[in-house]
Length: 115
Image (cartoon, rainbow, N blue to C red; front, side):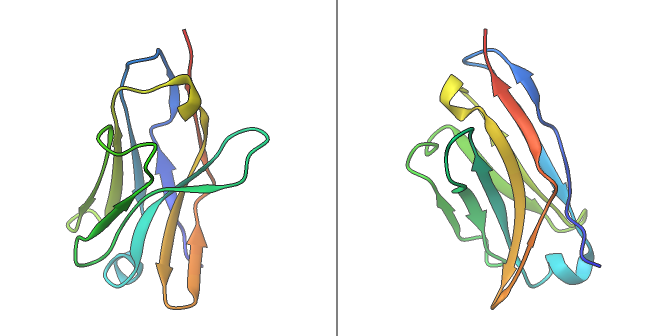
């Protein structure tokens, strides 16, 4: 049973910061690309950021320059540092792991940006 355990969501004011964390097993982390998707109310799920095992990254245009994805090999974890948050960043954020045709999802963590 593959598990992606997320933490770090919450309520923050516009302009604030949050850091999301996602931990998985070493066997998954060592070969899977890891990243984050989000789904806002009434919208489809969209890619936020992803990082391969080679540390190459891909970001959504809407978060470039504000969000940073990183991996900690010692902790089998991926992080999403979110700065300069906007109300339109409000969504459920899902951790994601992918290798070939295998994809796994976390349970989701709510991020709400509101004054």
